[in-house]
Amino acid sequence: MKLFDNLQKKIDKKKSIQKHYISKEQIKQTAKENSRIIKELEKQNNRKNVPEEEYLTKMRDSNNVVEFDDLHAYFFTDAGIVKAVDGVSFDIPKKSIVGVVGESGCGKSVTSLALMKLMQKPQGQIFSGEIRYNAKDGKAYNISKVPREDMNKIRGKEMSMIFQEPMTSLNPVFRIGDQLDEILFLHFPGITPEEAKEKSITMLKTVGMAMPESVYSRYPHELSGGMRQRVMIAMALSCDPNLIIADEPTTALDVTIQAQILDLLRSIKNDINGSIMLITHDLGVIAEMADYVVVMYAGRIIEKGTAREIYKNPQHPYTVGLQKSIPALNLNDEKLYTIPGTVPNPINMPNYCYFRDRCNKRFGKCDGEYPATIQISPTHSVACYLAEEIAAELAKSKDGEKNAKK
Ligand SMILES: Nc1ncnc2c1ncn2[C@@H]1O[C@H](COP(=O)(O)OP(=O)(O)OP(=O)(O)O)[C@@H](O)[C@H]1O
Ligand code: SF4
Ligand SMILES: [Mg+2]
Image 1 (spheres, rainbow, N blue to C red):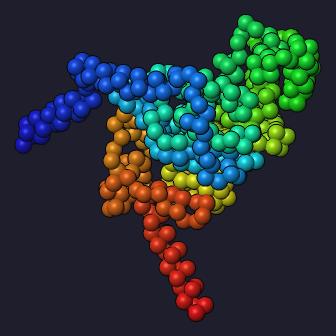
Image 2 (image 1 turned 45 degrees about the horizontal axis):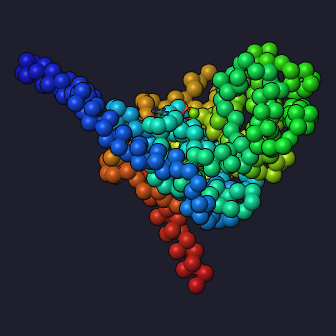
Image 3 (image 1 turned 135 degrees about the vertical axis):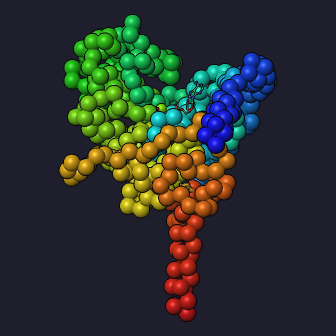
């Protein structure tokens, strides 16, 4: 019997190795298929002199700056298709901060890079879906269809990005002033060097930089991490954008500087009268800053709502887990909660709930297909079988109220 068990174990092990093994032939086949798809998508992207009507669209709600509508953004790799963003829909309303939260690798950055059309080329592509952008001049652009050359008109002037690690975004061999001025020369043709310098120094003052004139003539390595991040914010602000995308803007900073940068972002939002898409894996940062929260898991949105709904009434077990893993001062000696397990392989996603293998609330239904998104309030939605029961109870209690009124 023991011999049989051992034999079975060996067969199972071999099978699992075979499942993850990709033969040379398969790689060749995948590369060929990828190259065909990429060629087609790149042809669309590289078109020149495309009439604007081809990529103009209409916003679903004119009060939104951005509407992600069933966005699919993929990486076509030799090992297979990485579905980094797999059917994401959410809005960024005007004058609001929308927080996008989720653990590493869930597709937060790729969502924002797709919006800026900055995914790594050629393998990174917007495969399908729409990203509608409401520009300052009242036109609505379908970003997924905007050709590369026309995207330069939107990037920087309309929306700009603050990256996680400023040292990688600043050029180490140019002075801060030159890098700030360059953006102005690019977006405001005709601006004189003196005007550009004056505006750049004003921007440095706006972001609370002490001795802006001196910082203007320094190199990036002569500044501290917090100062570099302020320079990045000044760069993002210099063209007066409608939308700022801040991708983990405080992760590389210590806690006091973090708080200052968050305060700065908040005041900037009021100054530019625009919106911020704030990406982080820290639900605590989102709690302080955001009006709306989008929780992503493995390329999909598993819960979204107003910040109040997500904090006071989280429904998805993953959101509940994320909240429990925020350090609290009153924890005494208790160990900090961690969500067990890891995210499934993005190339080989299961056909059931992606969180199932880590979920402590799973029940019979969870073995079925991926759960549908359930609306539990006009602004709050959840993709989880548990929410179905809550929605049914809510409907029942509403019916009860109606009957009582009759
Ligand atoms: N250039 C690339 N080629 C292939 N896969 C990529 C590439 N860039 C990102 N991915 C994959 O896309 C998925 C989403 O990545 P993304 O960078 O959006 O994660 P994230 O949520 O921003 O994580 P983090 O919090 O660590 O920044 C991951 O599975 C990642 O491996
Ligand atoms: S659908 Fe089931 S397994 Fe998935 S998060 Fe909800 S309860 Fe957990
Ligand atoms: Mg990221």
